Image (cartoon, rainbow, N blue to C red):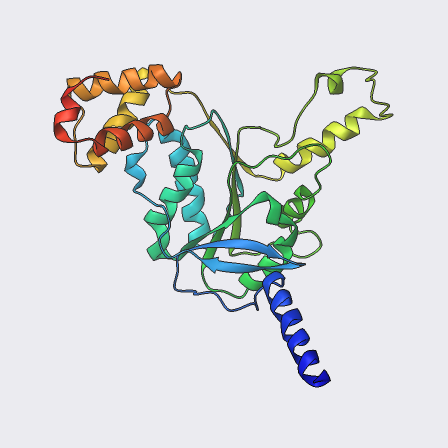
Length: 288
């Protein structure tokens, strides 16, 4: 009876451990074109994404110059020539993340692969680079909506990835990051004062530490708020993608939608088209 009780208790303990321990690391499906890296202990796991959200580059409006520079940098990377890590900053909803997703649609056949990395998983980036360095594909580590608050130190792992630290940077890995903050960290008025009240003896060194992260991105791309023409062009592109056209009725509805939202951007345009294309045809003749 004692042995039977012991075995039952051991099975109970194993079930509880199985529920909290990370799964055994397995080789990802390298035939996929998109992945997600997730921290597990001191390392991580690379999960393939069978149906990534991608679309054609020509669906994006009002970002022609940013697109031109990003495409040129990506083509250099794919051709094995020197290329830069990229930081895209500026107004929300203006196509920063969408540009990266569209690159995957356009260049997956040329060997480009996209790996989504959340800010909380940055500390394990060295383990990811160890997995990727021997692969023949070209990988973009995609850090979306990246920013850091005071006291966070995960940005230090990203700095090492961008510059390579003592070891050389991986030739088949670049980092493309998007953020609404140009320097990725909060900046305060007190930092510009001669004698700030926070007790910092050398305040300029604290400022330099913050700027040093964004400086490691060789290519900076800035995105700006949409005017009405740019917004309507974005609406037209997404309507065409849905098999519809921008006529007088949909134009008025799109403008009304942006007024209700209090914003004009590519994201607002896409959200309008989701609503408009999802309506029954007879509903589309009624202005919002």
